Length: 177
Image (tube, rainbow, N blue to C red; front, side, top):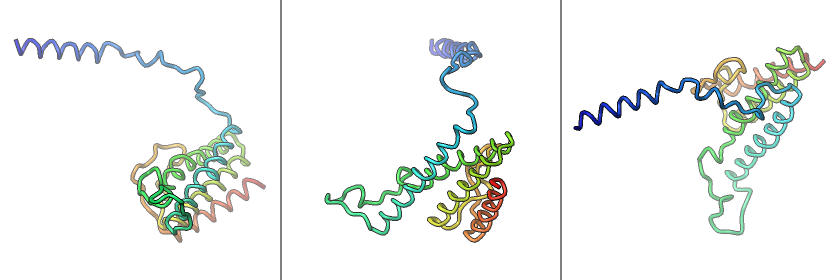
């Protein structure tokens, strides 16, 4: 009896697994665009770079140096928690940086150097922000807009980050002129 149950369960699992190959093909969201116009990518780059990344980094520094205080004892503004919720790393490298890189790639692919120049400025800004706060930061192994992201990037010294970002800003000046 026990063997019969195992065979029936195994047959059901095999049937369910292989019976619906095109199950996910019907779930196309008509409201989710597959291609976004390059001019519509500029607003998220500005918002996430200046709003989320810069605000989060400045808030972290304020909390670590204890410039901020609250009337309540043990308030969240006074207790530092090392979680991804409180880290500028997520705001910089997960939200803002990919948008800046995508703006560069789209500007290069569509022959729109002004957009790629703005993307390079924001990319340099975000890397300056990250290296100012954390010291050594990834550079070469970060998301490049064409390949899959490397989940364990190699960290580069702060001096090298500054040199590469200054060269990136020189490229942006050429793109914008």
